[in-house]
Image (cartoon, rainbow, N blue to C red; front, side, top):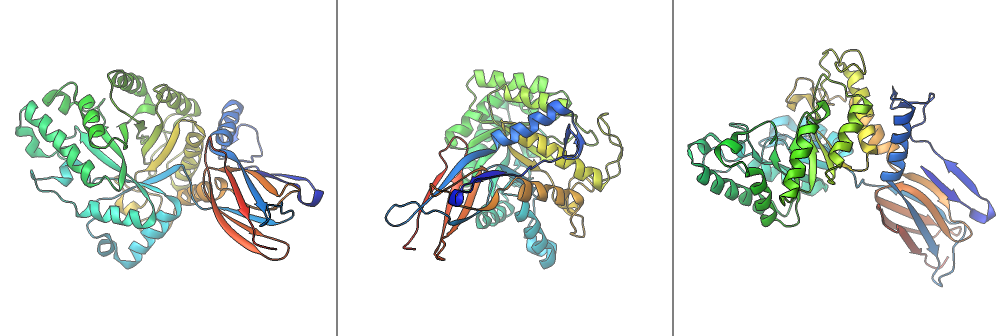
Length: 440
C-alpha cells in the first residue's frame, strides 16, 4: 500500500510492500519464477486497487491543512466465500460453543457463501411437490443479518439423487422439461430478494443425464428460463477439472452456448483436485483460457485436505499436512486474486466436522484453526486491506491507492474537531470523498 502526504510543506512517500520477499521469484513463500512473480504483483496492484482522494475543507470551503486522517477498510468488493452446509437448526446441532465458533470464524474471513446442498433439486424436493425450505430459510436469514452475499447452488445438475430427485426419472423428455422449468422458477422466485447469484447448470461436460433424458439443448434452455425468471441475477455455469486440462473442453462449450444466445454471466471452476498441486503455468494458462470467453471467473469449490496424502503434480513435493495445506491456499489464492477476470474465490469447507472430504476444512473438528485459516486471514484482513493514518497536505488532501471496498474515514483537526464518514473505493471510479469540517 502506498500513500503520499505533504502536510505543512513536508513531503513523504511511504511504500509498504504487500508481498515483500527476500528472493526474486517468490510469491507467498513459493518460488514461481521471476516472470510469474512480476505478473502477480502487477496484477494485484492494477486489478485490485484504485487511486482515491480525500478532500478536507471547512464550513467556508477553505482547505484544511495538517488535519489527521485515519483510513480503515471495513469490507471487500472481491468475493471471498465458503460453502454453508445443509444443516437443520445449526445452533442445536453444533451446540452453543460450536455455533459461536462457526459464526466467529466464518464472518472474520468470508463475505460470501454458497448453499452447499440445501438448494440442490434432490435434497430440496425429495418428493414431488414437497419442499424442504427450512435449511434454506435459516441460511438466508443468517446471511441477511451479517450482510453476506449468497450464491444458490445449483438449479440443474445431472447427478442422480443429489442433482435431481429419483421421482423425475419416470417422466418423458417433454415432462422433464416442464418440471425443470418450474423448478428453476420456483427456487429463483422464492429466493429472489436474497440470492442474486446462481449456479444454473452444474458440470455439463461430465454429466449427461439431462442431455440424454431431456434435450441436447437443456443447458441453453435452463439459462433462458433463469434469465426470464430474474433479469438481474448473475448466472454462472460451473465445472471441474479445468486446471487439469478439461478447460480445453469446457471453454469451447461455453463459447458455443454464448453464440447461441445463452445468458451466462460468469464461468465457474470448482478447483478441487486433491492431491494435485497446480503449477503457476497451469493456473494462469487455465484462467486465461476461461477469460477468453469474455466472462468473469468464479473459483467455486476449493477443497484441499490436510490428510497426509502425497502431493502430486510435480511442482511441489511432500505430503498434504496442515502446513502444506496453508502453503497451497496462500499460494493459489494469491495467484488467482491477481488475475483480472477472477471476481470470487470460494472454499467448499471451513470446518473439518462438515467437510465432504476428511480433514478438508481450515478449522479442525475441535474448533481450533489450522495454519491455513491463519494464512487466509493474513491475506484477507491484513495484506489485502488498506489501513493507515496520514495528514492533509497543502491542498487539504490525502491521496492513496486502496483495495476495492468500503472504508471508514476519520478526520481530526489541530483544534480537536472530529468527523467520521464512509467512502467506497471501486475500480473505474473517481473515488473522491469530500469532508466539510465544522468550525475549527
